[in-house]
Length: 241
Image (tube, rainbow, N blue to C red; front, side):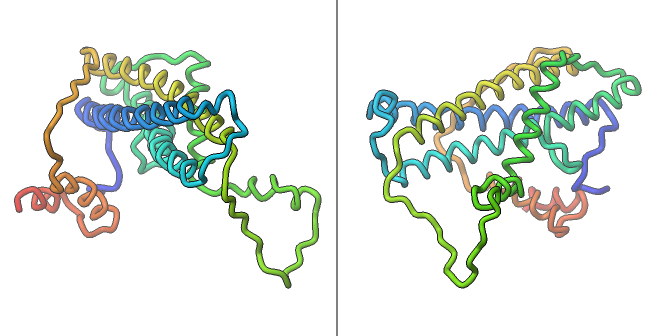
């Protein structure tokens, strides 16, 4: 059994898969929305919408950009990853369409607009999760064929301040992304109901402390990817220690 891949042989295989998606997406969207609200509060407290030229620290911009970018990239992968070994809504849809008749499974029919929305997420995911060469073509010096003087040091721009407009633009872009993710999540929950016959109910349980032992799942996953864990018995051994 190749643990790097995932086989859809039974209805239960689809249930495991879609529940994993719902769990991960729900938690990540909660974090994303929390950080987005924090950014909105920062913008309002400093009246940046009315004063977009007001300067801010680059550390502030970098912090929000990193926090929101991390959650956004995770959600792009959860929804749009088409890699064979990736766990995503795209791959769920692809596989349930293939297996629906054989296993007597149901899924929702997308409108053309909904299909395009999911594909747009895949396009964004592919753009943001690697460094596209289109960025080189987008530079002024490449577009105008400016000669590069290789005898001089490579110049890297470092800014002491940012215009507040950078945060406004960041908030707008990420707010639009969150709205798109929420719309797709509603479709995913409808697909869950089609698959199971039961509505997708999400219950958030609060605990006083998260123990470090929770890292066991990503540790096992990395062990699988690095070929140190090769069988289900190897996985069971992790939990039996």
